[in-house]
Length: 506
Image 1: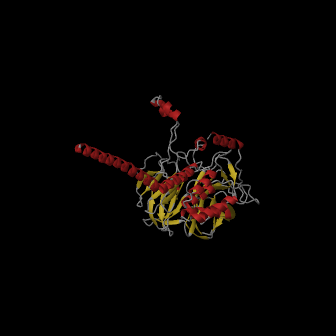
Image 2: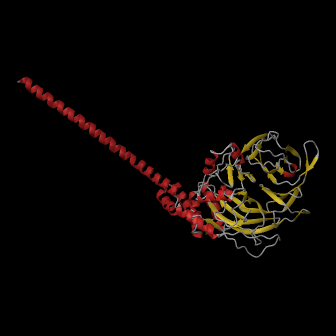
Image 3: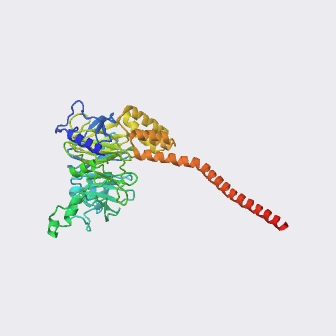
């Protein structure tokens, strides 16, 4: 543990990953200097094969006769891609190849009046076609169809608690399969606001935890009421973005975490999620994100210009997810267990780099990044290596362990720095009942928990195989022991009778 912390400190001091200084012009130089990497067990970055390649950039400065300047959010469905232009108050719709289809800018309210958007910041389109819009400038959330027929207008709840703000400023919105509406609002730090499908406010879910050090807690015990009131108030951090997956889990990102809190979480290898830029919330609002890596999913473990600032999460295939860092333009991708698979991207003017990355989504296996600064969508496609990682996860989750095993073998041939594929190989052998082979892979990957589980299974299997023999031996011993006792008693009895009979005759 001490060596790990030492390695982490040395890496931080080395400042291996300094952020670039982006320019305002929308042009590209010939190539990017950013490479793909992962973090090893010591918290030091290790070079990795490229998992994704830059495909193309879609320029959105002029679309459908409009001059766009302030793109702020993106939503991907099975058919379309929706992008919010905040300055114009227009929702633009594209097909999945980014060909412009149409736009929505005028709405018919339930009372028959006409309304438009004012500086909207969020868009969500449900599978049933309902359009949910965070109309920030108008302090409301609209629920509409694509024709602009509004079925519900959410305004500031009268029973709103947890804030003294007079203005309701929704910035992101999603809805689950039951129609419950979840809203992130600016300057509200009590969690994600939740409304019924009819628009009734029911409370908050997923309130981030408050971190107060033990020394401060001790000092508070000796403070007067006036001193306590004068102290810095520790309040939960507000969410900045949310997504929802097909299983109704809400993924929330938190970007305003302090550098010291993140550094402490990384240094202590805290996997509790007490300080985290991403949460996966169930219907009760509990964080169920799995964190089984050496470090929790926080983005970069080392920095010279501040920690990663996570502003969005893209939900990919096979429970893979990618976090978008607006500080350095990087994309951090993890599997369902919280294991980092790869990191790539950067800020600048080279191809594949961004200026102001603000939203990320998957379109199939491709990754789309909305760049507000360059008013464009940057598209990345998986390489052979990246596709192997995606396929390995899919086959493993489908129970096709032999095929997953082969994918992991190919990954190890391409990347000797990556320990996790050996865990995948071990898992495949484990699920096929080859526990000794699994232990060898786990040992190589230094996965002590999985190694112990495999060893325990060998013990149980050994016991189950030998148990009948052990029981048989015990029973045989018991029979022999009891038989011997009976034999001795019978023999004594017979001898006793003979002796008595002889004396009587005399």
